[in-house]
Image (cartoon, rainbow, N blue to C red; front, side):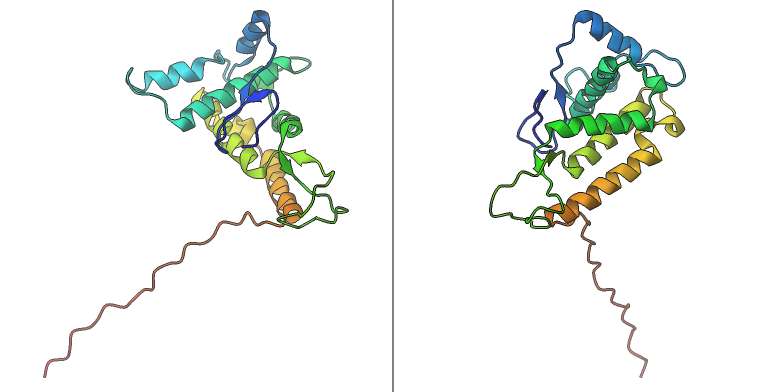
Amino acid sequence: MDSLQGFETTGNPSVALTPIFPLSMTNMSAASAAMTTTNGNPLSVSSLSSSSSSSTSPTTTLSRYENQKRRDWNTFGQYLCNHRPPLSLSRCSGAHVLEFLRYLDQFGKTKVHTPLCPFFGHPNPPAPCPCPLRQAWGSLDALIGRLRAAFEEHGGKPEANPFGARAVRLYLREVRDSQAKARGISYEKKKRKRPPHNPPSLPPPNQ
């Protein structure tokens, strides 16, 4: 994932975002209070850690994916707390998720050429250009996948999952297509070649 200014990351491109927000203890308490599921049950920012730990033995460490998912969940919880006005998870919609994704764009490190740029569609531009930096589509797609899973793990109903909203899916598809054209690359998955199917050999006819 792109390294984000204001977020703690590592060199691994799939590492999730760790927020570094200047929140007071009062704001952190508000963040926990804001994270409630659609059925009204309390949903604390740290509950992902406790629920994950309860399903594993004390000596078992969380997988990289689970750690990423927990950090992403904390990041989104703090984003809701800093939202003006503060927003609870039960009132969060696909539109708010899109606001969050656009907010992350300011920390992006992926150059996305505009149609007027001479390097538009050039996978390896020979010189720098003033085109904006954005979050890469792959980073956003993986982030939404983890948040969608975390939402349901905390009691959210699949049909009310804001991270799986149609508007979010359409936005990610638009980002993928526009970045593919601007950067001159393809995000299409390569299809596996199926091994040739040889018909079973028939036994020789009886003489």
